[in-house]
Length: 375
Length: 218
Image (tube, rainbow over all chains, first blue to last red; front, side, top):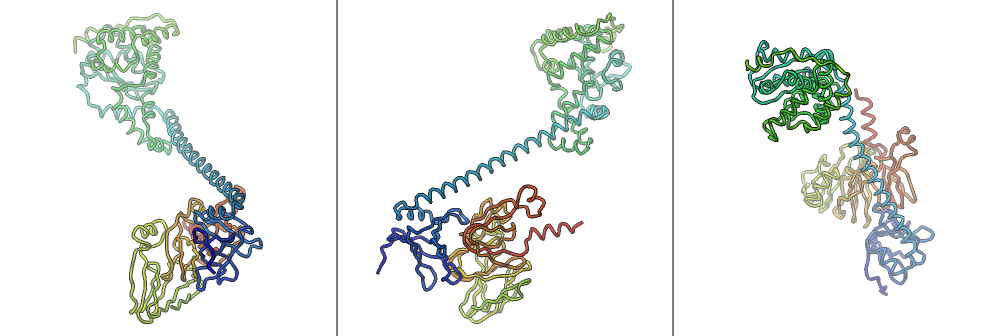
């Protein structure tokens, strides 16, 4: 007699002690309230479990395998085909809906928990990487600040020798002597007493001056020509010397530090840092320091001028004069265009001056006219 | 076809006696010696892409060799590491093998590469597993001795010792105990197998060998 079969048959398997090896693949059908398994082996053996006696369980390697066991547990029929659970539920008249739903809920909870932990670990990994990256950079910055000033000097002289610039004036040229004398007057008031300031006057029409790390200062002849007084030159020099004593150069190096250089510093390789610093110093002098660094250098410069009995107002005057003279042509004066707004700048210098100790200012006994004429 | 596993358990090898018209499929490179009248055909292991996937993901060869003979002949198949081999017969059921365990099968057995999941990977069992289904005999090998367990319920095994299991078994990774126990007991992660079915285990693990070798270097 042919059994009225379910609409579909499924590929699954069966566990039973009577099968050689205890297991076999089987073709499953659901009919007349029974789950029937015909083993694939030759000859085929038929097993069946009435649906109302089915103990349903889910699991297996895929977590989708549906097991149907007898109450005694001696016969198990299983299948992981997608529609099997649906068909089983349908044919049993919803009898299995409860346990199936319960099991699926458990599986969904498992999957959710897994997804949750996967997300948590991914976020934790990302956070660790992020913190590690910035932690190394931050530590390296601190390490750089702790380096001796001799490192600044090395970076400065390396950058200086690698720079292309106009003809350097002789040390005994009147303009060089003038600048040197001002530096000598300001030097005792520098915040780093043993920094070796070296000043070079370079033939260049630009009104410009810059400081390299370690005290290398370059003044363009254009600046000397345009200055109205020796005090104004002193103002610019005090500002540039302050960049050196405040170690803004090495600060810039640490800002442009990549992760590789940061790790190098942390393992004690300063040589790489010097090379990097020289490179940074060369490419960034003309683009200048940050606004905050400029303001800081203004204020420190004003302090030095005041201590050297030179009126800091001369520095403010020079900026004001330049602004007036150059207008808003940024390319005419790279130095001023990247510097803070001159109004705020003059204001902050004047404000700062009030906080400085009151000193009787002495005019500089220097012949600016002779130096300008010699150019 | 008569197949004997000889020199068990340490240096097991398959001694295959092919009758006229018999065929056997073996992992590429497994053949140690064969009669001159055996014809060897090489084909992609489960198609071109399947073969490549099996090579790179399942640690098996791109190619498998099919040996056939028109008159009685001998063939010896080996595996690259010392250990036992075992024969099991598929009757329409399925068996999952860990990468590298497969040695040979009869033509009625189908091979496919299946995704084993992240859990299996974390357990050190690989992201993929070889799925063998169909009908016929199947031989696989392991590092060390092979023993099987009929699981009904739950069993804990050390990661790296599991060689083969049936699809009715679910695999979960867990810690051996608390954080402290897991780190200092030397057990680390363990694998929890659950369900009904058979698992095959190897008495040695490659991770164990690597760790032991490592401790003797330098």
